[in-house]
Length: 410
Image: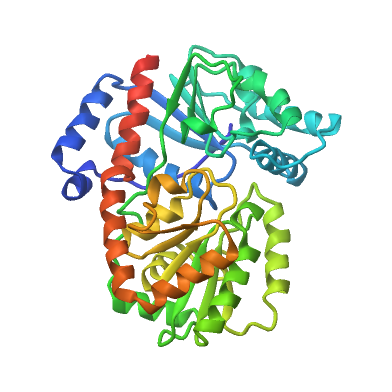
């Protein structure tokens, strides 16, 4: 049987002060229409990246609503995850020469994972391309199947998309973050637009006193008396970590004491991350005020929380982006963001209101320097950002939208 991920318990009442009783009553009413439903969320890794963070918070709340929700992960070796990471990049527009060996590897592990799905469910939600063929290979078995795409597939690599498209069209519904991400030739009966959201009560986003944040950042080796900028993301070429270092070098010419923290996570399904990590370490040699931290070197959700709160500015210099949960995470903490004008980022960040959207290294550095020199302006932007996230990008809203979809499928 596929690996079941253990999750904690959550109470819906914990969110009442944040989103209000009316929002929680709507969740209860929707869950009542699905009473006792068995729901499976299936993805490729139990840690690292936004999908695993979403599911760790989402599944306990579904259970608190009386639904029999599980989170399981597929299995695969390095060869399989190398292929699926190439597919992941290709769906976002990267060049990839699709081979017969790629197809065979992908289908081999999708077939094995389909056979390991021994338990029956009423709804099965498959996240991203790694296990997209499982629905076709297993058959519906009385379930409604949803493919949840977390990446920008507006301009997919033609060969990879042609290979995956028939598997995706076997689903009862597909979910995308933005309408612009839907491939023009996709034929699925139900297509929903549901942006992700953050859990305001998770260790990554819960309120932490400023003095505790300072102590945590200091413990990581950062001089808390000098300014710091941070980017939190997977080590992925689309996040442009080398561009962030270039931004830092430009900004440091204007603010000599500036420090940079690149905080990344290594995920089970991302062999490419190790190569990017090594490249970053080589690129930042000779920069004593540039630091690279990972979940393998002592950085957990609490450390990320502290960095996002303590930094003068947080950068998210994405070139291509599905959503970028770290933008909402940072704005929720009242810290201004300078980010690439990519994918779902403009949904979260109101340009000139809660931060700045940029299109180049030079523009990014200019905005960072301005905010560091005008902290009151940055604080006002952070406050505006928190308000926007509270209205649109918190977990109960995400669960409401997904329950509405399941009710329509039922």
